[in-house]
Image 1: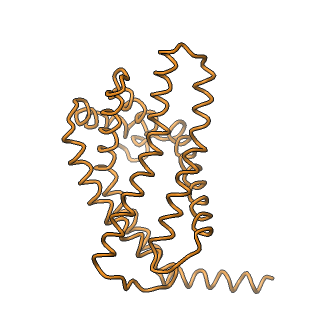
Image 2: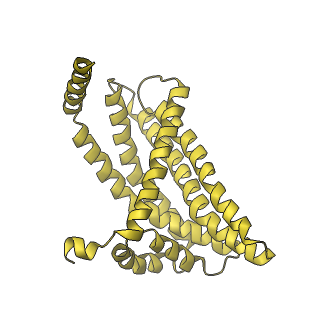
Length: 245
């Protein structure tokens, strides 16, 4: 048993080095970090636009407040004026520009993800350029829809539910129930979306049941990371002390 575990550990370390896992992880992190700001502005502007259209009072202030509650205080204080300036006035044209910028930036991250999955399956990428580019754009749009649904379900549904409860004078337990039900909805949708991504991205055919299992595992990790990050923000985050700013 010990020898078997040793062989597995050595093979794992060898494969990590051979496939340059650290370099690929850095590439993915850089590309998606590059995409997150235009995408975040687009999502915030879209949410404020839709919330205003359905009659929610001061949607911009509520969205900024919700973002501030989920970011470290120092970071929230830094980005709040910029976000408020961008989405403080209704500009539908911003949605189009934001959508194009977010799609262009995120497609680079999707291409890096395709490369990583091909490397994980030890297959070469030999699909023609145009179909591969169309696939990357399609997967980016799929991921965008998934993130939008997750964002709207977590943040937007809370704002909408509170407004509906206030208008209809419903019991607070309704808000608590809907707040609880948001998470299974996000989990199910993300599992399916990521499963489709795992199925289509690599240049190899993988049974969808395994892709769906991988999507479920990703969703569990994502929700756990979200909860841990919220705990960190609430109790430990202080960039001024950490970096001396």
